[in-house]
Each structure stands twice: as C-alpha cells, then as structure tokens.
Image (cartoon, rainbow, N blue to C red; front, side, top):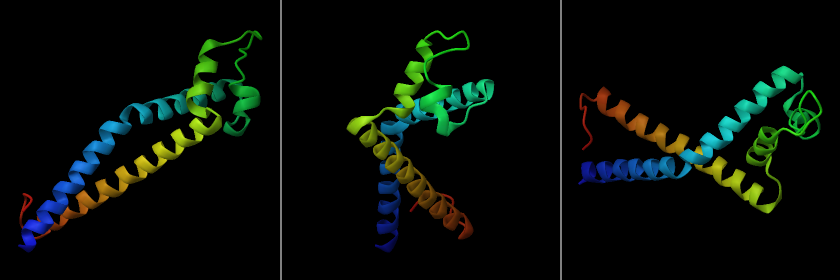
Length: 121
C-alpha cells in the first residue's frame, strides 16, 4: 500500500505541475519577454531597470516621439494599481509552485533510478 501512496502522490504532483504550467505559460512569456525587451532597450539608451518609468521606457524614442512599443512594454511589465499587484503576485507564486513541484518530481525520479526502478510505482 505504501507504493500506491507514493505513486498517487507523484501523480498528484505531476497533475498540479501540469495545471500550473498550462495556466501560467502565457503570463510568464509576457512577463519574461517584456522584461527582455526592456533590457535590450536599456542597452541602447544606457538606462537601468530602476529608471524604467522615467527614462528608458518613458514612451519617447531618440527623436522625442511617442513609441507605441514602449507603452505596450510598460503596461505589460510594470502595470500599476491593484490588478498589477495581483497579477505579479499570482505569476510569482505560480512560478514558485512550478519550481517546487518540478524539484519534487525530479527528486522522486532520481530516487527511483538510484533504487534501480525507472518507472513510477
């Protein structure tokens, strides 16, 4: 019965890991992608992430004109207000959950391989 309990727990971990991953993928891509583009923009302007709101992603390009991409990046990566905070907390918590469940699954697979078993159960 102990083997069934361990197998069930691993299947539950895998289920939660899969659900979290599918639920978060779009938001993680948006957050990481916008952060990457902000950083690339900062390389060209010499700004830093702490100056994002005032300089690098101010929405003004080198000619002093409004840049639509800068506004989109600012909205996606640094949205303000209650929904922005809720969004960042959910993405952060979900990403931590993915890291924890993924690590637990890895440890179980590693323990199985060490004991000579290559399949769950």
